[in-house]
Length: 383
Image (cartoon, rainbow, N blue to C red; front, side, top):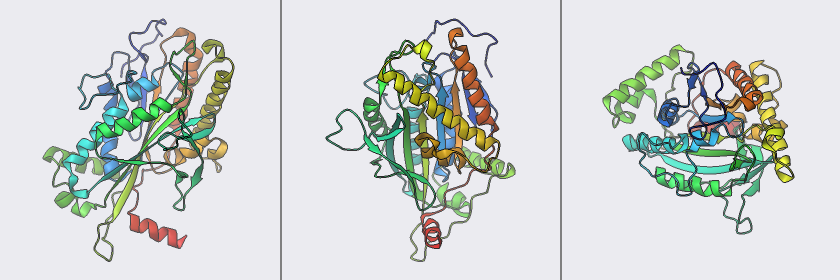
């Protein structure tokens, strides 16, 4: 771990050069200082992508005050050209392009399960949800407004949400760049390109179901020996820690391979903001109030989960309603807390650390695999 007892002055070497704290499931707290590379931070994310291919839902969320480096950590340096793939290991590109490349690398090593990858992108702006991939000629400079709902299988969904199939990391990042161009932004005294909305990128992976009994023969046939052994060791560790072992998955009566659907949600939250420091007025002032209320609602949900309350206030805000599955559901959740190094932002830093404490105290039980599609259909019929 790398940290310091004192906060340095305002001068920064690069955007988001404060400490980055990661709160991954089933592992210890990690602290990354300003000298750490983006590749080192991504080290906490990489194992979760293997879990995604194993059928687990995954969420990576960046939280922190405005200007502390959330978007830098998630996306990398601001550029209209976007990332160039494949990535240079020493590149400053963030978690999202690295995750895209790693996902398709893993898929290429095990193509026998016929994976399908779909992407959707939304922003939560002033407590409204906007679809940033919707093809609507009327909405030329913004997304199309959508509503969040609870699906028949109990998952939260966005009604009429647009999604696009992608076959490469480059295509995925092309969609991300298009969505970012529509994201609400406004300059403040703290950040010249301040994001005024919460960005949620959802990657849905649909694969042929694979049981443990066939993993060593079929599903692991295309993996290198060291990765196969690492996967066995990882499954053993999860079982010993209380996580449910993968279940045997039979084929359907017609002999067709069943499908497992898992979701990866990459969340770049808008930054908490002190009005006296950011100097916002007018519409930007309303945006700040909405951002702070949504982050307070998120903290309330984590507080309720950590205290095991009978009622969890997911529906107090569309952000928490939309993220209900990853906050209190069956997903593997990693929270990245970005801390500003500036003394003048000390109050916001302490508030952010308080959020991190709440996140660490949540005990949600072991992550669960998504059941195959035929089992989900059977559950719906019973319901």
